[in-house]
Length: 225
Image 1 (cartoon, rainbow, N blue to C red):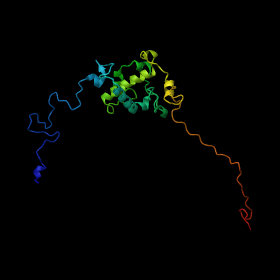
Image 2 (spheres, helix red, strand yellow):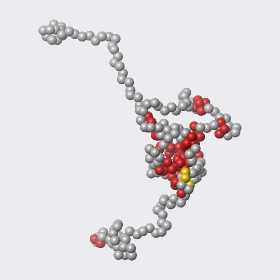
Image 3 (cartoon, rainbow, N blue to C red):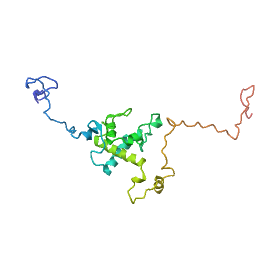
Image 4 (cartoon, rainbow, N blue to C red):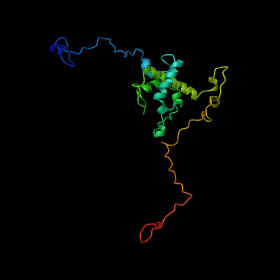
């Protein structure tokens, strides 16, 4: 094998060259070139903004499959802080952190879908962004599921379609064989962490333990002989 097969003529990064008129070995991209997967032609889909303002509405149909996907992603990334019902009392509260955002406040119930997408994309307050972990399509799926959660926790009898019986949640839970109180209020714990286990007190024996008195001359108990 000849050595010149290893030392082939090629351009090195950031080296100059006399081949091109601009003297650069690294060539600029052709005009209008877009990297694969980086053509963000639909700005609303990638930002949640219209005229620099958070807008409402999904950029694609919110089907049942989309809601299921949003629920699955929500349970992975959002429940540790916001809980599965979206009241902001997730597991972090039991570990001493402050309450996260409650999706059932008037402010967030009236917030457009673009707000939730923007928060997941850019972060908000103490919440970091999740743009690296959650794709834009999944962010919209989560936003649609948040809206479904809001409806589930603030539903009215007028929301029930005509001819459909509206059953109390406690009755539905009972029909499903759930334990009593399953459909009750989800209260926030008052403590900032798990309670310390109680130390068990020693149990006094009913039978006293026999003792021996040492003899003065031997300093030990007497034997048989």
